[in-house]
Length: 536
Image 1 (cartoon, rainbow, N blue to C red):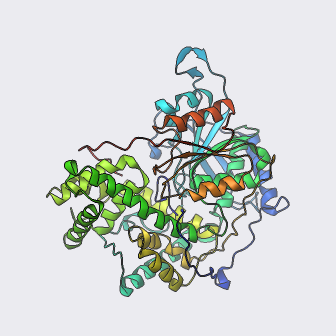
Image 2 (image 1 turned 30 degrees about the horizontal axis):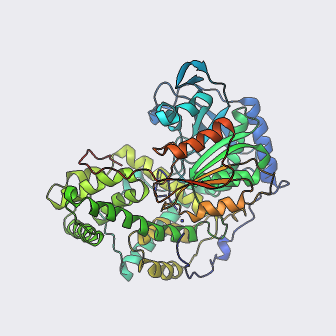
Image 3 (image 1 turned 120 degrees about the vertical axis):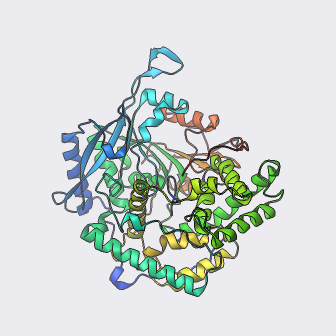
């Protein structure tokens, strides 16, 4: 289930077969109890990190971070059951609180400690997060908090994982059949099995230790290394699941938590069912985009009704199948570029402009947005995909028989063709995964066990469908849900919605939450324009 910087779940009822896990790959206990070896190992690692602290200095050159940002490393056990065994280094970035009121330069703002952030994925790096302090919407928070980001385990430069040569990662141009043939399914299943095998060979015995429970334990060690008695944490997308696990494992160590764009934490949905529901939700979001484009037919000329916009998309896909744009952009690359429009409204004008230009004879905007990335970009994407795959495959049981995937997704694709099969190919290595599986925790906190927490969600978010936010709200006693109505951008904190930001600031700066769940009016829809498209 991809989200946030990557691909990042409430749909109708899906008829699913119970997950079958081969005996050789049976799940083992999570080791989450207070008396477990992992719990004891976490205590050892946290004490060690508290004593060592973090020596901040220059950031790694490869990260290309600005000089004002300072970086350091924190040592964590690869296996928390053996805290004195092999250790890996997590890279951490920090921007100190400015202590300056952005609205009154003469007023000094008292510090409130560190705000640690995870951007999701899994597989995304948070090293750039402290730079948000320069954005107007974040300056009040940046005045009070040290903004801290980090690269989670496996994400470069933190003991980076790799499953294949980055030069082989981008396979393009590729088809994107909404109704794949049996031969095509067989081909993609073989590729997924080979990828899982390559991950096992490259990752070795350590591969099993890259999972969400260890990511949550790493948060506890980071808290201690930062010298924080209790953790103030903000997670987006997958980062919300990470935060929920931390809240379950270490509730007394939480000061404040913000969950933005929430993964459904129900252990029965991690991760196979969540992905099915994500695919269904993307169909609705794809409809939102087509409706917006149709409403601006005078600008883009792609049709004045959503059906006509769909026809234009299919025409472009057919042309690209016959002759890839720039030799690199085929139907799959087109679909991947348009999928970003399902994540973020800001992409709507750029994607519509690229599709329009292509159909009118100018392929360059589409090539710029969907074409092959640089060698450096390929390395980063391969690393992110390796971490994403390892974490999700290690986290929970998955069906090990492709017939289950085929049946469930064939049914789903009849009503949600846009994203369904692409999501299958992304996650299918988990059917052939060779490392042991964890058992997902049943996250639940009783009244008074956890400080009040803030949940933020857009009502039409496709990457993490809205039901996930409601499920987390039910599971965390004392939490409050703020909803951006009739909106679908994935991740709403610190964006253009002043109502959402007001609740975020009231919580982080004043320890104040609404008395009950509440909502905000949606952000304005993007303005149509011909503009230089972001190359993402």
